[in-house]
Length: 430
Ligand code: AMO
View 1 (cartoon, rainbow, N blue to C red):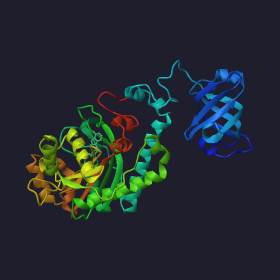
View 2: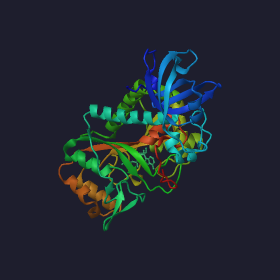
View 3: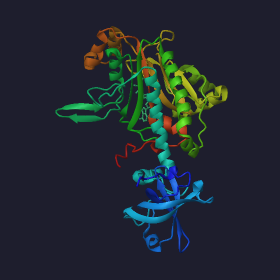
């Protein structure tokens, strides 16, 4: 007998159906009970009259059910199943569930939920986050494949850092020291130059950030692109706008139910304002008396500036452009208009940076000289620098943090909520 899913029971079938799932909720009326069965698709009401079996049922057991679907206007979805046979196929071994699966509110802290991720994900609203996340990845793949980009998978155990700074995890690699990749930066550039021209990668990135915040993880998923023969960084911003438009269309078509659970109204993107960083800093100071750190704006500044953009441009998004060279990695192309600035940008979405990108230095000598200017030793960059000796074309790219875009889209408060199994300074399990 073929299994049917709860959500597939939309009309009455004469025959017995086979359902499998977990006991979501039970309402007993003495001689019979309504038992709600949950599977990956939804919840269906069962009517059970066998008192012996009812006494054995416990929340979250997994069961196999054979029964006849009948109409009941009061049942969720208008259909209930009159159970003929029920078998317990997955026993439980708990005294008390760590938190409720079947109530609107969880009544547990986020940390407890994460400790019991294997239970919290049984909640349909929690699984919805990851359904949407999976569709963000689908949309990213779909869009960039359509644009002629080639998917790559680059190593995550690497010999040197790519993003400057000290946020790297070291790994014992036999008798040598290696690092976990902070980003696929060098390899995505290399693959563009190697002839693919346009590449994308969906992969893990590692940051040994020494602070636990609502927006930082130590391991996250990076949606990266890199493309050759661009004119400048504005070509890249157009790619990101194109992707976002496609993404929201894709989510509207594929995640209606899940988006409703979080009351998400998808943004309608026409244009995204592009504002040089120094102007954003000036506006923050003049309008909000908010001072910014040198060559950047901090988390509070991002939130305030997004508020300003929402009021002035009616946009959830803003590109901050022309970041200073001193605050950008060594590979970033200097700007030809503003002294000390670069052809790089961040995309801020509802008060949070979700993307960094920019045009890269593609000329071998220029890159080598920039490394020296940054106080780095060109010989430490071996294969990366060498790959620029063979006609590297003008190119650039960007990376979107998957958990960050998911979080902002759903209006979640903490990045851990949009991370399946978060890694932070205090957590490496489950
Ligand atoms: P950057 O370091 O800004 O740029 O990272 C790109 C994007 O990745 C996400 N992100 C993070 N998400 C969660 N936790 C973190 N600790 C974290 N760090 C970064 C953010 C961020 O915007 N190589 C460049 C990209 C490029 O230029 O192509 C880079 O990695 O969403």
